[in-house]
Length: 180
Image (tube, rainbow, N blue to C red; front, side, top):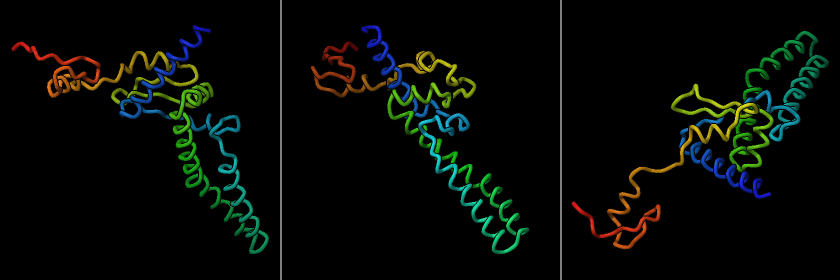
C-alpha cells in the first residue's frame, strides 16, 4: 500500500510538472480525433456527430418529396460536402477543446485519456521529440524532458532586495555579511 501511495504522489508531482510546462508553453498536447471521437471515449458527444447528419438527411428528403428528386439529391450532395468541410472541423475543434480541458483538469482524467490513446505530447522547441499514447510513457517523458520549473534569478533578486533575516522564495535566509 505504501508503494501505491508513493506512486500516486510521484504521479501527481509529474502531472503538476507537466501542467506547469503546458501553461508555460514549453509543451504542446495534441489529440487523436479518431480515437477520442468514439462512443467509448468520455469526451465523445453523440449528438454532435448524429444531429448534423440527421438534419442534412431530413432536409434533403423533404426537398426530394416536396420539390424534385434531382434537386433533393443535389441538396443531399451539398449537405455532405458541407458536413465534410464545415461540420466535421467544428466537431473536431469541440472534441479537442473538451479533451484538453478534461486532460488538464486532473490526473485521473489524464490517465483515462492516455489509456485510450488519444493524447500526444510534443516539446515546443523540438517538435520531433514526442510521446504518443498509449504506448509511450508520459512519466518517463516528463522526467527526461521537463525539468523542475525554476525561474532563474528570483532568489538572487529576493536576497538582494530583502531585509536581513527575511527568507527568499526557496527558504534561504539572507545574511548581511556579503563579501565583495
